[in-house]
Structure formats: C-alpha cells, structure tokens
Image 1: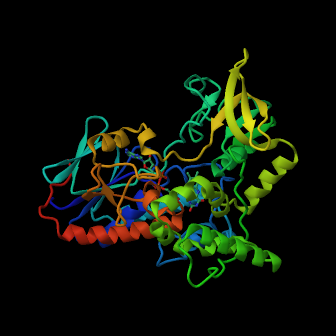
Image 2: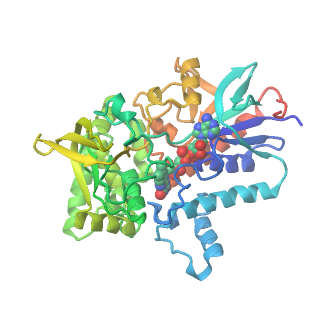
Length: 465
Ligand SMILES: Cc1cc2nc3c(=O)[nH]c(=O)nc-3n(C[C@H](O)[C@H](O)[C@H](O)COP(=O)(O)OP(=O)(O)OC[C@H]3O[C@@H](n4cnc5c(N)ncnc54)[C@H](O)[C@@H]3O)c2cc1C
C-alpha cells in the first residue's frame, strides 16, 4: 500500500487527539502511526493515575475532547455511570478522564479501515532523509514517514537549585514525583519534604494522605504559593472591550476589576477565566522583554490563580494544614546534611526574614513542575533533535521553538515543512497550552493544516515496514 504516512510521536492527550482529527480530515490513503513508549496509550502522564482522588482541575463540562461537541465527555460519563454520572460542574478523577480518551481511540480502531496503526516504540531519533523522515525506534526498528508530529508532552522536573549532585544521587532524594518509587517504602510516621508548592505537590500530598501517612509533610518553594481554589460558575465578561497589550496596564486593569468584584461580593476566579480566550493573542503580541518580565515576576502568581485546585482537593489540603501535618515554607535551599540513619536535614533561607531554618526529612521529592528547558532534558529524542539542529529550544526555555502554525524551527530558525509539534511543548509560542480546552483546539487546527499539506506532497511514500 502506498500513501503518505504521518508519524505522531507520543500518545498522551495531545498525540491521541491530533491523531483522531487527522483521521477525520486527511485524504483517503493517508496512514497515521501513533507511537508511544509506554504500555498505556491515550492517557500520558496526567491521566495515567489510578488514584481516584487525583481530580481534574477543570470542570467536566469543559473537558470534551471536541470543540464542536461540547457535551461529548458528559455524554460518555452518562453512558457509563447512568443516573449517578457526575454533573457538568464536577471535578472527576483524572484516571476516569484517561478512560474517556482511551475509549475515543478504541472507537477509532473499531471503525477499522487500516488508516491508523498503534506502535509501542520509543522514538530515539528523527532525521530527514531523501525528502522523507526516518524515525529510529528502539529494538533496532525504524519507520519512514512523510511528516511527524512531536507530542512528547511533559518531562520530569529540573533539579531544584541548591541541591548539589551528591544530594541528587542520595537514597533519600527522588527526582521524579511520578515515578513508581517516589513514595515507595516510606515509613508512614517519617517526615517528608516536597520541593515545590504547585499542583504536583498537591497531588503528592493527596497520595500521602490516601496512603495513611501520619508523619509531617513539608512543602518548600521560593515563594511558598499554593494554587488557589476553584469556585463554581461561568467565566465573567472580560474586564474591558479592548484589553491593553502592555503588561503593567493589563495587570492594573485586572487588579482594579478584581477589587471592584470583591466589593460587590463576587469572586475573582471568573475574571481570570475571562482572559483565557485572549491569553494566546496577548502572549504573541507582547515584546520579548515584556515576556521575560512576565516570566520573572508574574508567572508564579499567574500559575496559582490560573491553575487552581478542585474544591474537594483544596478542602483536604486546608485540613492537613489546619491539623499541623502539612506546612508550607517559602525560601531557597542552602545546604543538606545526611544523618547516619539515612535521613537528611535540609537548611533553607527563609524568604520572610532571611533566617536559616532546618527541616529534617526521610525523603525529599522534587515536585517542581514539568521540566521544559530542552537544553537540560536528557531524553534521547530531544538530545538528537537539538544535536542535529532539526529543533531548538524556544527563547524563553518553555519548550521547543515553533511557528504559529506549529512547525518546528531548526537551529538556524528555518521552519520545517515536515516536523510539527503539539501540546505543552509549544508553550513558548502560545504560553497558554497546558489544559485540555487549549490543546484540543490546537490539535484540530494542526490536523486541518496538515490535511491541506498532504494533498500537495510530491511523492507517495511506501507504507511502514
Ligand atoms: C499531573 C498533571 C495533571 C494535569 N491535570 C490537568 C487537568 O486536570 N485538566 C487539564 O485540562 N489539564 C491538565 N493537565 C495538563 C496536561 O499537560 C494536558 O492536559 C495534557 O495531558 C498534555 O498531554 P501531552 O500528550 O502533550 O503530554 P503527556 O501527557 O506528557 O504525553 C506525552 C506522551 O509522549 C510519550 N513520549 C514522549 N517521548 C516519546 C518518545 N521519544 N517516543 C515515544 N513516546 C514518547 C510519553 O510516554 C507520553 O505518554 C495536567 C498535567 C499534569 C502533568
């Protein structure tokens, strides 16, 4: 069988969704090969959790995989759970959402037709060769494709500043909060230190509480900011009919509006949500220096107001703090000292008064959020892309450098006509490319764009071996 082949690398939410859209839009004869290194397709890191208390941080009503069928997820829930199905404003478990995405992929496979192939493979390299792309896979395999989409998603966090190489190799340290050994073998009465105070930390606290952990839990970040709580309700109207593209002016406008709402007894959350449809445009119009200022000064505040905790999760975090089991600290790690029993004492400089405070822990887990500086990611495919110059990090170290049409930019800045990217790896170009509502739109747009390009391809490529 001859025909164009599109290789989608990574079968998390982004890779799965773009695959589904490609299959709907590409001309007959096009084959899509979805490659995933893990056993489980269609869940990725976010939706692979088996813990029923790891909740989505977006209400069910906004989690349909398809923009033109906003009720798709709710209908699937109703089909599965009947009368007891969660309502539109519920925050369902992320594992359940993974089941939904897998259901969509299985339904596509069930339709048959041979246009879709799933391949369990670790893609190690991607090279242009004779007008095609050659993907080097593990176990000595390879795949030829006309185009490739990088949907490689989130990587483990970067090492926390202040922890030296010896500490990072110590038995009490865990570099990856999602790895199976992150909490394994932990004494339930021992103190634990989580580095970071964002949503990853929140997940780990929930996991610890669910596992019956009784010991103290410390969480430390530079500012000690915890994600805020969701409130029910639709987004408000934007604060003005024309939003300023100057960062400071926008910040002042939002603050003024939030204060006005507070006076009227209204929550600020719908105001932040009202900015979402405009965030990508705002990011793209900001000059580079303003973007850098945003990332330096405002990002931590934006993150905690924009990416919030579901109510039930926030209630557990508040209860753990009130009982004294969970303590949040703000400061910078200064030094570590290992004790004879294998535990560690970590000294940090308190943000509030500059004093040094010591925390004892049996385990230190890095919960600093996904690593996105591609110069520091050790993944073989990433290293290969950068070494060959096929890709380059974006200037703000948020992911890979892509054009507004999601085409990869090479080391020389030139735009690839064959390699594209979707999902959080494209944050440098769009900023707001983390949550499902943004990614689903991006996947749809890219699939439409590639379907158009496929028609213009010069040669038919043989089907993969
Ligand atoms: C813990 C967590 C919770 C989240 N919760 C929510 C939420 O509640 N609501 C929401 O809207 N968003 C949430 N998000 C945002 C989330 O980033 C996106 O929704 C989305 O899941 C990102 O999907 P992705 O496919 O781009 O990345 P990932 O889910 O990281 O998937 C990437 C996939 O690519 C595979 N892969 C990578 N490299 C290779 C390679 N070389 N070869 C083969 N396979 C490869 C990986 O194994 C992985 O399966 C959450 C994110 C995280 C991390």
